[in-house]
Length: 72
Image 1 (cartoon, helix red, strand yellow):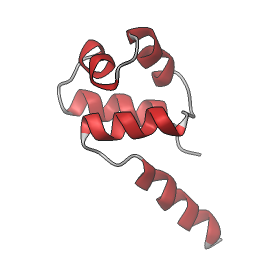
Image 2 (tube, rainbow, N blue to C red):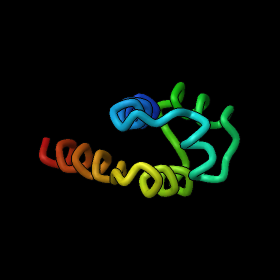
Image 3 (cartoon, rainbow, N blue to C red):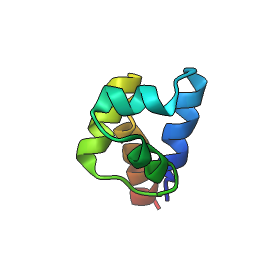
Image 4 (cartoon, helix red, strand yellow):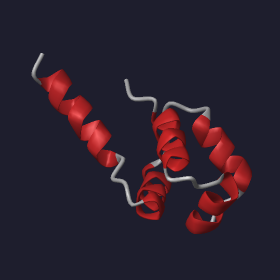
């Protein structure tokens, strides 16, 4: 299964973005960002907001996993 929190953190760091920046971009509290980093799942609204803020479609990660599981 995808560890979406780790994926988001990795992409954020790759872009040189900070937690405060991301929290401000998605209109959420910094503590939520830290909780997301520690979770393997996320609600779709927050994932959409984060995808837009980081200009990275995290939904594609789920699609790839779906395709892999379906082909087994």
